[in-house]
Each structure stands twice: as structure tokens, then as C-alpha cells.
Amino acid sequence: MGSAKLKKIMAEDKNNLFQNYGDRQKVCFVRGQNSYLYDQDNKKYVDFFSGIAVSSLGYGNRALSKALHRQVDSIIHSSNHFYNREQNEAGRLLNEVSFPGKTLFVNSGTEASEAAIKLARRYGLSQGKDRYHIITFDNSFHGRTFGGMTATAQKKIHDGFGPLVPGFIYLPGNDIRAFEKEIKKNRGVCAVMIELIQGEGGIQVADRGYVKELFRLCNKNGILTIVDEVQTGIGRTGTMFAYQQFGVVPDIITMAKGLAGGIPVGAIHAKNFLPEFLPKGTHGSTFGGNHLACAGVAAVLKQVRAKAFLDNVNAVGAFFFDALNGLKKKVDFITEVRGMGLHIGIELSMAGASLVPRALEMGLVINCTAERVIRIMPPLNITLKTAREGMKILERLFIEAGGKQ
Image (cartoon, rainbow, N blue to C red; front, side):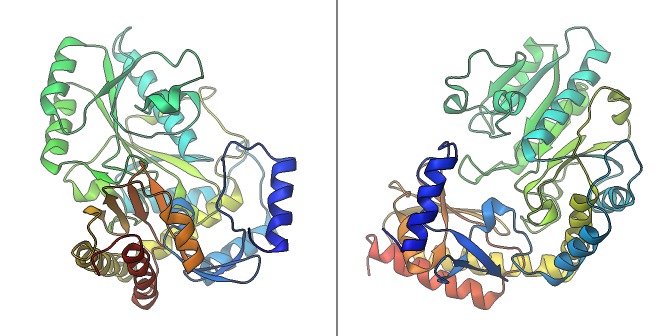
């Protein structure tokens, strides 16, 4: 059951908090260093999850810590009624690492989805009175607010919440004929929202040829392209954004998670012709892009954009793919290893949830999504030495669970 400290923490959770997260893993992390976490009893863990791809620079990163402390000591928040130098710097950096455009800061990934949806609809309705439909894809995930939840093409996310936001169309992924058929039938489509790698959907990578043809058809038919980079953005796939590996440039990207290394923030970045469709009074956020959040954004981007940093992501990613494909030969229940960079999924032929607490017992933090996919998403600056340490634990875990050796 855990230590007395943990039992006390678990009792306080039950007494004081909503239980919407179900049975949390029986650990409370109290500090971290580099790519390691330490629990309430000072047990050490290798982190292969980074808080759902949020702690992009791991723990105790000197430059990020220095930037945040400096900002706390000067000004944390003033609101969007005033100019904000930290917002300006963060927006400039995002412009440099993506495509020419402008940025709107919000607080989270689902708020980024909401802002992108509103922008797409305002644009679409300016082109025609019925042009407000948005196409998304099966097993997608775009957030938990009503717009983001409705954009998410998963029934389990919708159940129990009553009428959803109208105007969303769900199509199968990697099926260009289904897409062509829909846009020929429905002239009211204003945008497509797509994850190039579905994270919650099990690290499903879109086909590059399909993506290029999808974008060609969208451009030909005046349909906006929105790429959800909430989980894949900010270096996670080995480039600043996943779209940069698919030979396309979207009209809008959404981002959050690793954007500020753990400080809550989200953003959309849109091509220059689009911001005019969200003029004064059409969208806003009290906390969005405050001084502290944007100081975090700038500190993260300055590190992640460096060639040596992204080279490390790709080198450690290559190590993982090689090691995991080697492990696949030893383990009957691994069916596929897929992903890009340090955004990796291990699909199993059995349910994977029971492996997560056992991994914690062994000193490794992993996650299971889509019932049978173990996600590997460590801090982006994880060293090869730490990656090897974690892989040794993962191999022992899998062999214990029924491997051949």
C-alpha cells in the first residue's frame, strides 16, 4: 500500500479533490533533477513520460529556472490590457521557428483548439453564410472543453455531456477518397484539423503521401489547414514542429504541453492573412500569455531551437527505436514500434495498463494509452546514459511480463 507519507497524501486527495482522474498511480513526486523524479520517500525514477510530454527540459534546467525566477522577482501578471515584452519575445521566437505569421497566447492545449476553431469559423463564415464545418479524424484528441471535445472524434469523450457543438465532421484517417467525397458533397467545410501523430490515439503516424494530398486539396478548395501540434510541437518529433517533416505548411498550428517546460501556456500561430478575423472583442484570455508564462516560452524555445539540442532528440530517438525493435524480438506481445523523435509508441497484443504500476515499482515512469500502447516521451534533453538506464528497466519489465527469454 505504500508508506505512511503516501497514505496520508492519498487520504487528503480523496477528502479534498474531485476524483475525476480515477485511481492515480500510487506515488507523489516531490522533486526532480534532469530526467529523474523523486517521490515522497526519496525513491528515484527514470522519467520516460515527462508529465505527458510537458517537462520538455526535464527538471532543474538552469536556464529555464533562472528565467522564471527573474520573472517572478519582477512581474508575473499585468493582463492583456497592456503591452508585454515577454509576449513580444515569445511571439518573435515562434515566428522564427515556424512560418511567417502571428501568435495568440492562451493557457492550455484545449484553449488553443478553441481559439483555432473560432478563427477558422470566423474566416469560413466570411467566405459564405453556411461555411462553418470542420473536418477531424477518427481517434483524434483535441481537448476537453466543448469545442475541443467535439472536435475529438471519440465517442467515449463525448458520452454523458448532452448536445455537442454542431458543425464537426469525422472521417477516417489516411483515406483520401473519403475526404474528396466529403468536400465534393459538402461545400460548407471551412477547415480541417489534424494531428500528424495521434498521441492519445496511440502514437498513430499519418501517411506522408496522404497528408500532402490532403493539403493540396484543401489549398485548391479554400479550406484552412489546422495542425494540432499540442503534443508533437516544440522539438518532440526531432524538428521544432512535426509538420516540418511532412513537406507541408499549415495555415494554423496549435501548441501547448512542452511550450514552457511545465508552466501552463498554450498558443496558436497563424499565417498573416488570418489574425484580422479575430479583431478586438472576438477572443481573449485573462491569463493568456502572461509575463511568467511567456518568459518560460522564450527560455524553452532558445534551447530547443539549437541544432545540437535537436540532434540529441534524434540521436536518443534512434537509440530507442533500435533498442525497442531489438526488444520486440525477445517479447511475443510487442506488435509494433512507431513514432518520430522522442514521441514513441510500443503497441502490444495485450492490455498494457498493468505494466505502468509495475514499472513504477522498478523505478521507471511510463504511460499506457489507447489500452495497448505504451508511450515513451522522456524529457527532450535526456542523455543517452539515462535512456539506456531506463531501457534496461523496461526490458526487465517486458520480459517479466511474458517475454521469450
